[in-house]
Image (cartoon, rainbow, N blue to C red; front, top):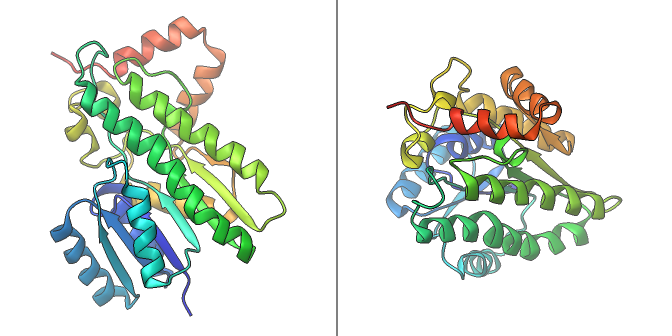
Length: 260
């Protein structure tokens, strides 16, 4: 029987590319995203093109009971999860004082509470089977404070540290946790975050989602702790470790501020 991956935020961008990567490897898929119509289309395309089994769960992941509802679906389907991919996420860029608190609360719920709860629910099964891999989609913003995306970078740093800590606890169980930390990627992320025109998304180093997905898949399968795809992103993160913090913060703010 094929193994099964559960992936969140699947209908566009990195999540969509990850689904194709898993399907190419003949891994069955549970697609989790908000838009029911888009999920159905994606489900049909993946089944037709790759011949893998797919299930679609339409769920608002910012809802406080999202993780429990997804887990109830898994129990009803009687499917064991071999690969858990926490991909869903978003940003609301701008000065913290100006951003709608409801958007920020939704971000905190999705990036921290939901990720923690669903991992808590699925991980025991992996440990009991002595097999499983978890991939967290972090960000280069996981590695530094990010003015103009203060809550986003804070929640993404939670993902990185949570993953690393759980990974250490899992040693000897046959289960691994990996975080991939991409930088700017050519998806709808910038448009939704109101970052179109910001320098970070306006240079030639913006990566394609397929390359990020491939790097994430390979890193997870190798059981790496963390992977930063792209030379430019590696340089950014390395530079942030050796530059004075005030300079890092000022440079990051400039990169994240839209040109007028």
